[in-house]
Length: 295
Ligand SMILES: C[S@@+](CC[C@H](N)C(=O)[O-])C[C@H]1O[C@@H](n2cnc3c(N)ncnc32)[C@H](O)[C@@H]1O
Image (cartoon, rainbow, N blue to C red; front, side, top):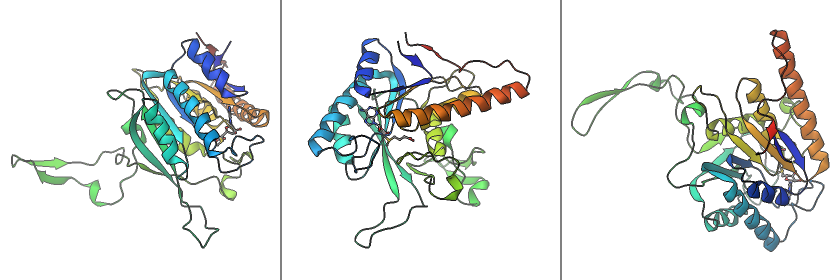
């Protein structure tokens, strides 16, 4: 019996099928599958022939489509080399293109004089429906770039009316380029786990904030799935948000027992911290919010 707010170890394929057959649906599938660049995850999943890569991706994209709610989104990390194939498979599955976000990082470095250094990873965003989806634009505003927009900007409408545009106190609406540093260097030593493709919590948290539905009190309350969970970053970020009062129900699946164990250890630490904070405020220590059996 599958439960929310926990990780599973094993191939995601049978788990995705049982979730689909049990009628479980997710508001957001936020995932970072192997890019097929030959990384060593402890298994062969990043070293497939092109035909295998396409077959593995096609089967899972179709299952993930079936697992989305009407307003649900699939947000899928990718790499420039294979982006075209994955995007095509999403169209083929009948999903609807919303954007390619660019995760841009400025702290990479070049190892080659034969081609420019890569400073980005594309993130495909497709929705289940072409009419309705969740994007919390106000939750992921960014600081204005110039001083000028701290003051009103006056303009005339087509009818000649003078209007003032005032900057939003929350900052500017985002573009499709999202800049976050990778976990390289001493600065992120405390966050790094040894997983060769671990994503930064800062980036994953903002993706959750952007795409997770909210309740009437403004709390994130959606169901989120990461079927390629790695070191558990999606689960960790959901748990951190839940420890701040949100009510996300999440689930992670990872093939490799080693990374599953790393995810469990990270989650235990987040929960200990949350329990400590609740304890110091005189609150009762509760089990993870939203934990329960999949209906
Ligand atoms: C790019 S990594 C994910 C890293 C993750 N975002 C993080 O921050 O740690 C992809 C992961 O998918 C796992 N994986 C590959 N094939 C899988 C499968 N069929 N089922 C479940 N997990 C799989 C790999 O073992 C690897 O850890």
